[in-house]
Image (cartoon, one colour):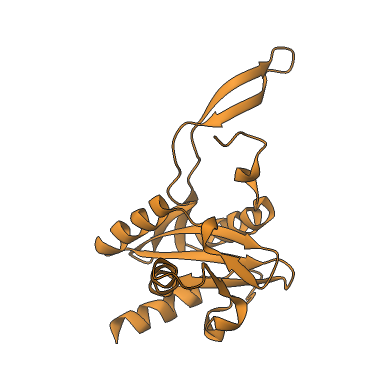
Length: 178
């Protein structure tokens, strides 16, 4: 079971950038997107400082963020990768199921994947993710490579917004409407 100081809390610098971006979107009235906290159950508490020193996750998380962009419901998860190969084991089946159900309800699901060695982030459309997911289910690679990704969906910094992913949502919507 994952604990508070385990691998489950990696990606905090990416999440800080996303949180900053989401706050900028809120201030500019472009979107309202919130981080979804994962419920934890404290096991040990330092009585002097009243800080939790050990805890476990009470339930499986779905996605990291949920919100609305100009009338479109969105949900997404933030993932980091230190190499040019992203292992699909970093995405859990219950996350895929949640994003699929979200899409079926008319929402937009995606991943923001940060390739930390390259200092680049990618907007991974749910449909593209499902292509890689199905491929692994067929016994083919259980990952995808940086070189396989659509160059149009790499996120650029614009107007002081570090991870300005709204442009990629707009492209995603355009592709869906074709």
